[in-house]
Image 1 (tube, rainbow, N blue to C red):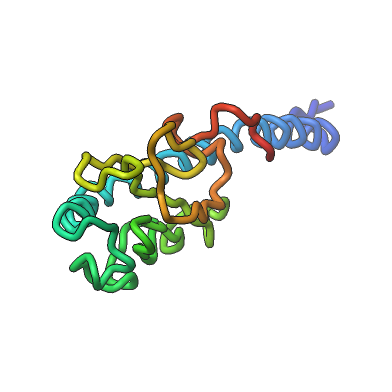
Image 2 (image 1 turned 180 degrees about the horizontal axis):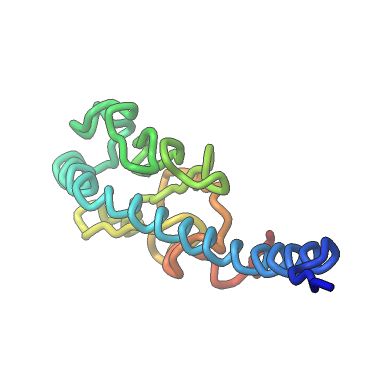
Length: 166
């Protein structure tokens, strides 16, 4: 008599179930790390755009209202790997995620707002990102339109007072 060796259907189903469980545990951290990387890369786009806003504020004593006023290309011409447009509104950059962004970032926005010293337009300006608070003695006329969940943002963009709500 010949003995048949191999796996039974039940053994194969158990192995597949274990692999599926392990995959569901491992995939979210990978996707979350990818989203964080995409946010960081997108924020780097502002390094070249921010000086135009700073120069406008220095010359005019106020923040530019839009891309055109700051001498920047139209929003739809400011693109990145994960950003499909960057709008400047009252001194705030609003980065709109699209293009190759992971599904958790698609159609989300992150705002980076210019802040100035209250009553002193000649003082140096600074920037706050997303949910980060504005320091005492400074203000921003722009709204924070951020919709990106805080867990995908760098620490400098998170609200340090209110716990994250996801």
